[in-house]
Image 1 (cartoon, one colour):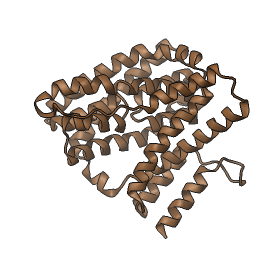
Image 2: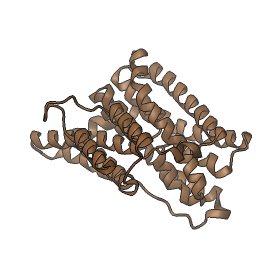
Image 3: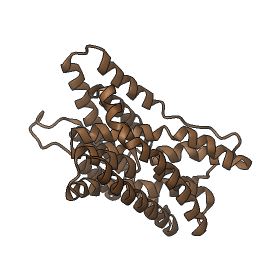
Image 4: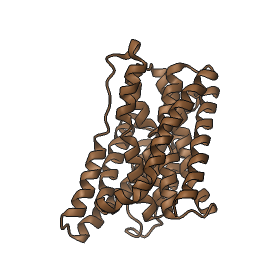
Length: 314
């Protein structure tokens, strides 16, 4: 029965608004439904859910590229790139120092720092094998980041409106301060089309920092992880290719519109699946100190990036 309800909810969330005459399920609502379902009934297909959420997020991000102009997007995103570089290096340095001061396990503290600095769970999944993190260290790091990432989707759009942010300001801020690509895109979509495009572009550019970070990590943890495997987010290059195709090839309007609408609905469904992946065991695995470290890092990047964005972007 749980599995039937699970797939019924997937179908309801996936259909565009107006197709069957019901209210559109928004990204925050989809995540909330998933969270409630997971904590009350439990996810009936955890392996499928995990695999589907990852693939659907990647496909949705690539689909969004068919609604974006490569030249205009790169021009718009250039304003946020300088602070992106500074913030990645700064958060990693502060996070590692904070973990040492709080006597948090070295690898756990490093993974939380990487997840906060770059792109949440994707960064942790990429760096984890390099540092040879064990199952518990991965679970704690992913659990902390997942919880804060879920909270961000609910609080960032209202905060942006309260601060009177333009779409360009909010898109840049969300891309820098929200952990995972899923919530960045979800928050951008909730704020507006320009915020969505800019947030997606900057976040995916930020995600490419996984590669140099993994290489540096191999040096830092060289005694323990000389054979660590780096996981490169190849779908980012497909996203850039989609933007290039949309920019330089005469695609019919109905095709690009269909692809972007499908991508947005796919993103909403992704957030439901991500919500379904939160279990009681995940909540129990998150310790006090790792959560405090993550909250401090999030506060540093959130407040500093907000100040810079409001001061430098119109």
